[in-house]
Image 1: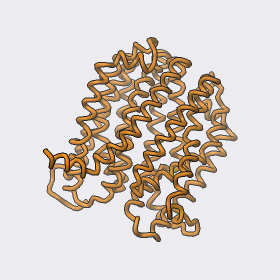
Image 2: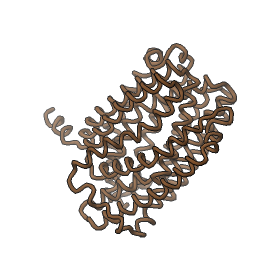
Image 3: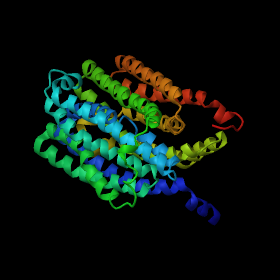
Image 4: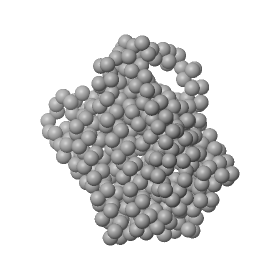
Length: 431
């Protein structure tokens, strides 16, 4: 028994998971309070409109950083001891992103009506929102790349600490702005919270020795422009196509059922995002750097199995608790107006289970820069999600969107098993 606990103590995944759990707990609490505030003041319709803004903001922010977060993490993990390569990679990344951010910010600021009609339709006028995004975008881009550097150096305690502080400040900002300005205040809170976290990040990194030294804009390398471009394309496809599909799905529900029903679907997505933040953070801060170091298929297989054995049982227990307490959760997080979302839980929880099992494998695409495999599987999965959502919404109403979510991740998991069949079932080989 003692040897078992000693193994647990020495397991890096468990160490990272334990500390990450603290950050996730804080984020969940702040997220729950934010959801409650929004549900009380804005109702299901307001939640649906906020969902559209969140999706488009994710796309805009990813374009501003060229989706290079994972690429930066990978190359820092590889070149920690090679200062010349590290300097060339980081300097190229920052200059590349700065250029794109300035261009995108100018478009948002000087043509906000285009973006308003694209996202909200001409029945709403929230043009000022996109002017605000234009101002906040440079701050977000800098913060994202700084966090990628912290993650790449495996300073996971600092990374999680910044997320905790950002969550607490974001909660206060959200409560104040929703209280004072209702829906417009909620929009502004979504926009400025990521930018505000830059202040925390800067305070932290200024105390880290030799952290900023690798940034030398005279060391820009065309070699890394080429290498990083593949990461940019991979990340941008996920960060732009998926939010666009979610917006289309949400609008399909609005057009066929109503804004209230779209709000129910957005509510279950919001609940899912609270606990899925744990897994996505863990994949980013632990699994991605780890997979980048692995060179043999046997080690890849063992790492995936270890992740499943360590993490999946916890989520299964959590999913069972959520399902059986779903009515209580709805009343606590939202209000009685949201009780009609209860049938969504079963499909969402099963879908999230298969999403977790899939993501653990899919991160190998990023770790090994498997460009075409990533692109093809993502496009197939996105197409399956959209077509099945439209069909099932027409057949079963807003519940069909969550049904499609489940079927999509079962399909995606099987697709990944097909792609990595040699790594899982074949003899050991170099990867």
